[in-house]
Amino acid sequence: MLMIDVVSTFGYRHEAMTDLVRLLSSLVDVKGNILIPGVNDDVLPLTEEEAALYGPIDFDPVSDVTFIILRMEQLDSLTEKLVGQVLLQRQEKTTA
Image 1 (cartoon, one colour):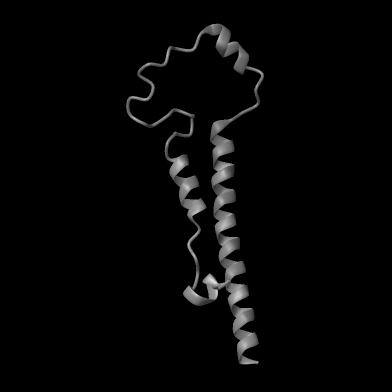
Image 2 (cartoon, rainbow, N blue to C red; image 1 turned 60 degrees about the vertical axis):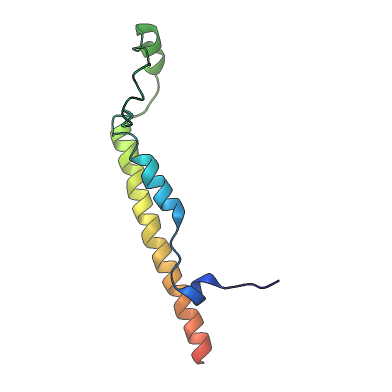
């Protein structure tokens, strides 16, 4: 079976998962409102009984979404650093 080392052969490989996460995060605003036009047209308003069910849930969309975005940025940075270290180690091995 032929194995190709994508990173050393083609350089840094783009991670599609981060694009998917960013795409999905663009479908709602920070208050949880869906931003797709027409998607809420057939949704009934929230009743008082339904609203009472959500009261005890500890969720702050602004701080929770901000935290997730910051973690994604840190993960992107960490991934770039790790890939750079791997490439540097491989280069050192080939020149030694």
